[in-house]
Length: 285
Image (tube, rainbow, N blue to C red; front, top):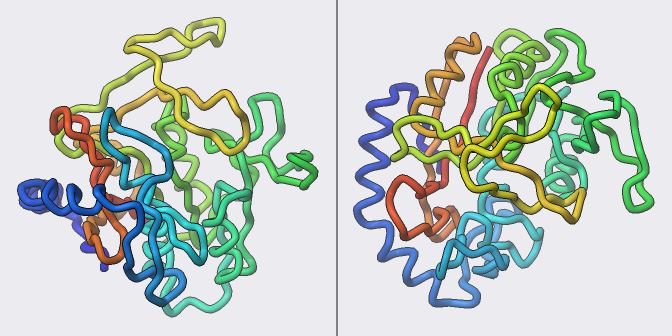
């Protein structure tokens, strides 16, 4: 179950309470190769593979792990799936967009909502809405800075650990709002650091379009390329205000730490400023 908060102070208090007892739970989970739990996508008891091979220093990133033995969806993606279901509950025909297409999450969401559009970001010189061959499969390209969808045409838009890789996140938030109908929501996740007071800018583009590093470069795994994808931001608590400033009428922060459902943190143990909790955002136009 996701607990949704509209008040930043109330959310922050809940995050602090969770932080106090979290390590003991995650110590136990991390000590196992597999653990049984409930997959909210499969609606049954499954076996979770604890590690996906992503490490936070000496510790397993449980946010990237906890992979379901049946559907293959990881912790953070499963939480996103549940948030989309929660958002669309009671809706019949859905016109929406998921900004990924070659993942287990995309497979499961398309099965649930056959009318949604799947896409990947394939590069800066490709027009949004066009397709390219990727590993022998036609894949649609969309850029969060220049979506091909018409104004107010979607019932929801969903993206998963994308925003930190966009060099200017404020226009990306406004672009998401542009394509949503009144009352529709953007549902998204990214590494969000609630104990980091202000967003850290790690890099920016110079006048020539080259990356200027402000912090040591950080790259995340990318299903499209083998090189990894550059991280421009570590989003802190002030990011919640940035969503509101983009014009969304309602901003909700979802928190769902639940070991049985496989919703766990990044398991970062080197200072609270680097901890990523199982958090999801829902911004409604």
